[in-house]
Image (cartoon, rainbow, N blue to C red):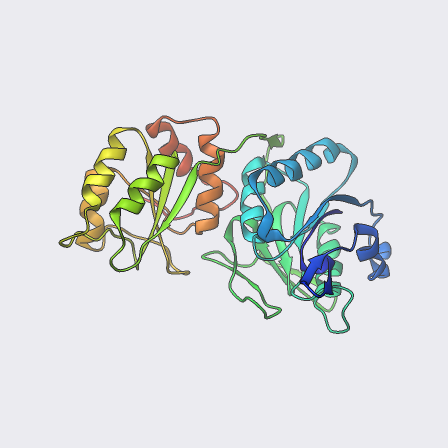
Length: 327
């Protein structure tokens, strides 16, 4: 078990909830885990997941890599706010992975009287110790979610996470696993140890300022534009996005379109405001990928490849079920 902090480890004081319990303390609240498997614990760090940065992701991946041959599986305790990002990033940093990497946490601290933490922790070890598990997944509220498809969709409820545009891998109920999709990892595991942090996410709003987008490009190797509906760029009077996009495309910057709509993905060919921009500027498009996975995938790709044609090939290559629909 790799403990990183989050609500599951929190105690309350005058400043609010703060991660303070260590890995061994957390395990002591669910003694039944000892009946499932033998557990060693590492306290990697103890932070609110709002403070997670790319260097934390690399540390998690390196910890798993250094212990990979010693263990049959790994459970990561993590805060819920950035858990979907972490699940996506680890899905790219650790590929062809036959061993389970289960990420979990809680909406309430494990030391409170009413909490989801004990069930989530037990279910995570139950699934990790099963014959079904492989690759990276989130186990939360009885659902097993592919790491590249997870998204936090509730801020307080126990059913915090949903699987976006992909079925749940399994459901866990009353200590029983109902497996719907089995892993198909082949070959030897591949570990990566770099991320390009210069990936920006620009959220469109009505009347958005093209100068801000221009600034985003000046600071990043790639910019993801989170647009409305199926995806498009405003082309009305006073916007000025054409000039900005043309300028940075010619300088080799990567442009990706995704949608603010949670389900069903993007399709820039539907409307003129999307189709003409895609044809003119060669936008990459997220299709059924989550924004979290788009960010993670670009950080991974751009850490070793900057040529636009090669970035495109890798972006549209399906990795751990991240993208299943594209042209």
